[in-house]
Image (cartoon, rainbow, N blue to C red; front, side, top):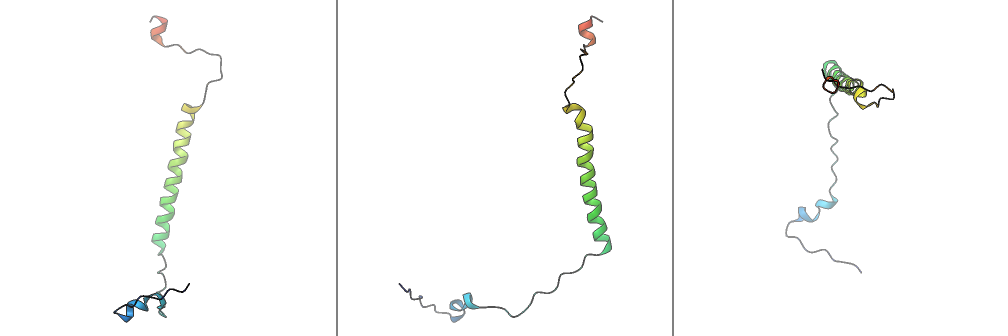
Length: 78
């Protein structure tokens, strides 16, 4: 079943879906040395923060396997 296109009063609207530009986009600008160094520093800072949080947080996450019972001073009667 073939559908006939509705007539459009403006020709450019009817032909808009067939339009292809022959103009290429401009080439991307290359990042400067300072921008590249800044990106590396930002990435390094983020990675160092994640590693640091793991190092600081690991003792709190570990379970004690020793048989020592730690008691507070209040329970000892001091």
